Length: 276
Image 1: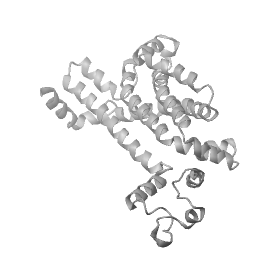
Image 2: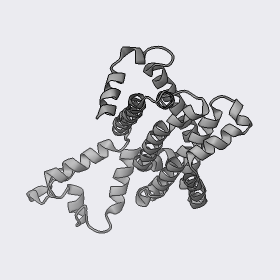
Image 3: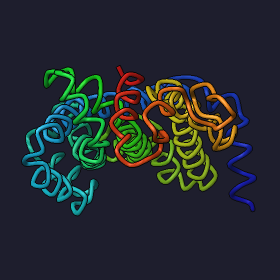
């Protein structure tokens, strides 16, 4: 409890937030470093994963190779890069280590999202004459969006939490508050720095959840499905047919209900229209 109380006192002291060694300056360094590393990781991993998932070849090998990086501790990579000639190039050892750490979840989730996209919808789009780029951008990526965003959220939180290691290589960020606390034998400062990193990771996670919901290209379709389920089995998207049979005019004329076998192609076309 003494450490928690001391950390609260440290965080509520205005002097600890001002200046080049203050919280605000270190927070800006931490966010900037994390954003640069995540942007580089996305530029490296996402195009490769989306293309391999689109063509369906070589993805398993790429995923397995990227996952090898998970077995190598980020701290060990950082130490090796710091001792190499790159150690004199500013934050590059930290950036490279964090990028390598962020690539596996981005690559794995994006590739799996592409491969697990509804194949009936994809084939319907291909049958409608969509080209490869159109199929990728207008059908496969929207269907893979949930898993892609899961990978981005996972990689972002991991990078934000691990960017504290930059302080061990002489870099900036919130890790400098923790290392300064260790150097001064100030347990309250160490706990305060750890709390700042944890809160930042939670805030970033919450912000990405909101971004995920706002930009989800399928959110309108999912809302329509929920409305249809709440309305009951007799009230579909179309109007009720004569006699209250619960069938649309088109289904009544064809002699089968919309959910009967053999009617999946119409549903795929409707789904494809919502994607497009």
